[in-house]
Every structure is written in structure tokens, then in C-alpha cells.
Length: 202
Image 1 (cartoon, rainbow, N blue to C red):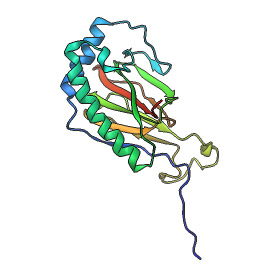
Image 2 (cartoon, helix red, strand yellow; image 1 turned 90 degrees about the horizontal axis):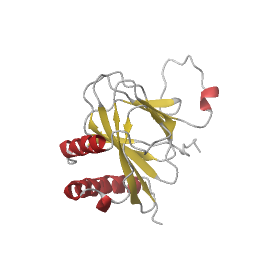
Image 3 (cartoon, rainbow, N blue to C red; image 1 turned 90 degrees about the vertical axis):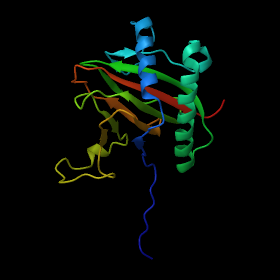
Image 4 (cartoon, rainbow, N blue to C red; image 1 turned 135 degrees about the vertical axis):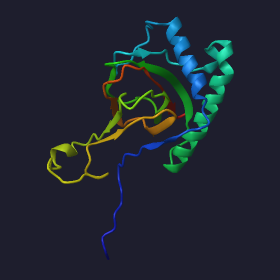
């Protein structure tokens, strides 16, 4: 019988453009929150500079004039996450939280993952130019100690990292345990992104 391949423990990342989410509304919301909380007490272990908004677990707690727009955003996010979780045979998931990051020149995010969630992601509200930072995903199985550094090409099996260059409207969804980080923003313009988590109902 010929050899048959079976993938075990693969990493998977979904990426695409979403034309339904109201990017202008989310940008206005991000700048509004930054204006009223310029130095928020909310912090993230991964942040290196930039502005990190508070975690929103319940949209009913936000200002009244923002609720409808944020509920519409979450409804679209629910659809995208449900598509992914069905594709990879995850259990039913529910929204946990989201937060907004605004990164100016020199800001970045250390390598991290999202404990207590199953699917996480990021929606790029405003990427003003190609000099803003990329998001990188890293394998976590020590394969880098075994794979030669002088290979001519690397593929999904042999690569130790995967880099995505964000553009406005891009949506990424991935299992929450995949380690990832954000490179230094080399643009003088602000990069606005929204991160989120989904987990099993409690």
C-alpha cells in the first residue's frame, strides 16, 4: 500500500478582505475613544508603545450613540467566525471581547497568544501606507532547530514564520494559541486595528 499523508497539529490562518464592515465608523469610534482616554489604564503585555483601548466584553456598556454600529460590526464578525469554526470543526463559540490598537511610528507588539479563547483575530480599520507594520505568526514546535537555514525555498511545512502585510479592510482569524507579533511601524501615520476573541460558552 502506498504511503498516505495525514496532517496532525497543523496551524491554520484565514485571511481575506471584508467589504461589509463599516471601516469609517470603526475609525471614528477608535479616534473618539482615544480622545477621551488618551492614556488609558488598560494595557496589554504585548504592547510596545502605541495606544491600547479598553477591552469591550459587552457592547451594551458603550456609549448609546455607538451601540448600533458596534452591534452591526459584531453581527458580521459572528458570521465570519462561525464560518471558520465550522470549516475546522471547532465547537460552538461565542464572542468574548474586542479592543482597538492605534500604533504610531515606532510602535509594535511582542510575540504573544490569547489564552482562554479558541479563535482570535484582527480587523484592519485603517492601514494608511505600505510602511506600517506587518503581523507575523510563529511555529512553536522547535522545528527551527532541525530545519536547515540554507534551504533554497521554504513552504508551509518547513517555514518557521508566516508574515502578512495588512491592508485596510483585511480580516484575519486564527486559533488563539498560535503565537504572533507585530513588527515596528515605520510609517509616520497611525495604523488602526481591532483585535477580538471568541471562546466556548461558559
